Amino acid sequence: MTISVLSAHPDAASAQLSARVHEVVRRALDERRLVGAVVLVAQGGELIHGEAAGLADRERARPMRVDTLFRLASVSKPIVSTAAMVLAARGALDLDAAIERWLPEFRPRLAVGRAARITARQLLSHTAGLGYRFLEADDDGPYARAGVSDGMDASGIDLAENLRRLASVPLLYEPGTAWGYSLAVDVLGALIERVHGAPLDAAVRDLVTGPLCMTETGFFVSDAARLATPYVNAASDDAAPCPLREGDLVAPFEGTVGIRFSPARVFDREAFASGGAGMAGTAGDVLRLLDTLRAGGGALLPAESVTLMGRDQTGGCEPPDAPGFGFGLGFSVLRDRVRAASPESNGTWRWGGAYGHSWFVDPARALSVVALTNTLYEGMSGRFVGDLRDAVYGAGEA
Image (cartoon, rainbow, N blue to C red; front, side):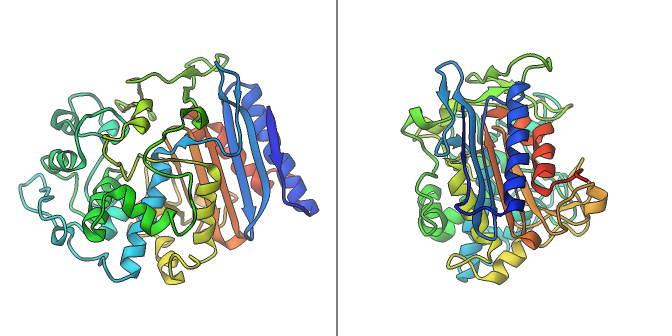
């Protein structure tokens, strides 16, 4: 089942874009690379394509809806990062002060044993020397031995204990000297709690989701009937995706041990609020945040704070397998569209989520695109992501 919702008066270019995007979604469903998806495209603040396609739950024949809830995974990162930037804009958080000022108990050391100075800016840009357990090569890695949670498993520990375990492992590099995708935004969540004086769920609601009326987005879901069922792409190209089961271990990249998923975690009020991998919400709520930032921050953030978020903070480093990209404060930033072989404008923001999501914002073209799917990892890093991007830009057309 497919539902398309377009702007009231689409021009010819918008109608052509919408047709191209619809074809990419249809093909991904027909080829059984995706089970279901919601795709929203806005330009200049106007919705020019909205589509809910496929099934939110295949076994129950429940159709995808525009207001379907998704486990957000790393789509939570720009939300929580924005909360930190609101605190910084208010003068409550100094991005370049050592975080030990607020988190004196979190003092990870370098491999040589020397204490390291970590700042909020480094947490936001993933240059703090931290890592992720799921990126280790096997179950004998240092994070695994320390029992560190990536925020998507049923760990049974609280955030303070997870940070204690994380701090017991030597940093991977001197903060500020390299880039590495990491649990930094979980640490940032603890920092936000301490600065704002409230649990992370309440802090994010006070600072971001409340002011933006993102009423469907939070760290806990009570209405399971609205939540998309997650699926995993099969090993064979011609096989349908399989339901993701509780405790399944699925590697996003070759050579990594992978993520231990707990789909039930989002129903557990006792599970700690993971700033970097938690939350659930709708595509519409995500678009509302991203397009607010794209438009300069509105009443939420001053324009200079948004500009800072979209500025590369890595000192020339780039994520592995992402030539031409750097990283800002909460998301990647395209530095060189030629090296990246991308039709996006330089300065485009982009990231995704392990449950099968991708999004990007091209400020130069006033474009904001959100694609939430229930199929990992096709919806995060599969062919669908590049096909959708190219459809939005009309890449390859004569």
